[in-house]
Length: 507
Image 1 (cartoon, one colour):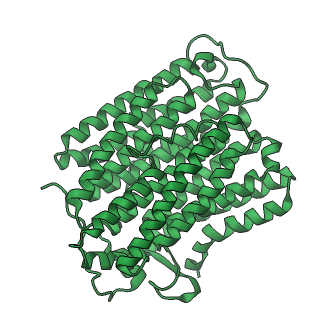
Image 2 (cartoon, one colour):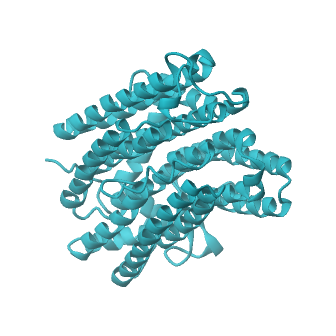
Image 3 (cartoon, one colour):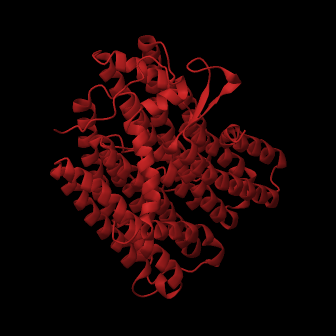
């Protein structure tokens, strides 16, 4: 019975959105209902993660149709970790949105659209069918288009148009890739695809399909050279939306790369995963170089999204259990810290009216607490001990050292140094020196609960890293041995389910 409740991660956001649409512009009830539902889903996501860790993979078959014929949802450790992360950020963003989202945006369905976005994100993490991954991608993209455009600011509309066009191109290629996959394999169920792709490991078309899906998911994840769209769309929206987008949306693309390149495209790691390694290095380097050239807090943070995605892709490219565990650890750290930094930039903007480094300074004299929150999050992003960023980078780079990938490790270390430089640039420009920032009437206290939640988590992860490492190590174990996933979905007697665990890509 408990297993059936996992459908709530998809159904409850939709029902909430419908109810909030019906409530209309009565903002107080929209706010209360939104916070209550998000808090409920957050608590259940944590319980669901513990449940999956203790009892194994949960598979929900819609209409009781057996896989691969019916629609299924699969909750393994990876997917539930991502759902729990999503709901944690949703809770922090909702807490920040209550005092900051203006009535005009509420009347144009800010909260219902946010729940539709949550439905799409949770569905993308839980689906066991690659066609329904496309469907959930489209749901979350449609909601993100509307949320990004709310306010009708000229900059917002311009960046939204770019975002829409690029995602439409990626979605069209995604659909073509699905058609080709079904034509070649006769199925779109991911467990069934894994078995059939393993049986046709010598088929050169599999590599073509891998490149098609890498283009699609790489565009959505903003890896090199497909990242050029990213900094703009995350800059104009309100801070709550920027925080959720910056923390979660690109990670849906990263998750899709994790899932497909550990479960499906395992046939030729000497090409596919070596390519991922090269792309990870370029993503780390070009992202951080873009960040240090900016003079606005939100633009710096947006470019850093690109850079840190490179560390995640590095773990997939190395394709060892330790590297995958480190990459997952890094995802958890990055989502929490990046969202916290975007919310802090929003608090700065609410109280000063700007995030430009040229117009700010001395905010530490106004709020030592906000300054301390920023400093903790910034140092964690740069990877300084004993915060969460240090352990996440240490695990990945240590895995690179074990595999003899010293060049990639060097680029990762350089990226950390340049990240620290750009974070100190924000510190010196916003919080240090003489107080010269403009003053607005907004108080800081109502803006901080969500930030405190996220910064507390990064401190907690840094103090007790073994707790999170046990979770990501379990997820990495399932990724490196896809038989666990396949047998959970198709049954233990599946022909061809004896796919071997991942081997190291370097000998």
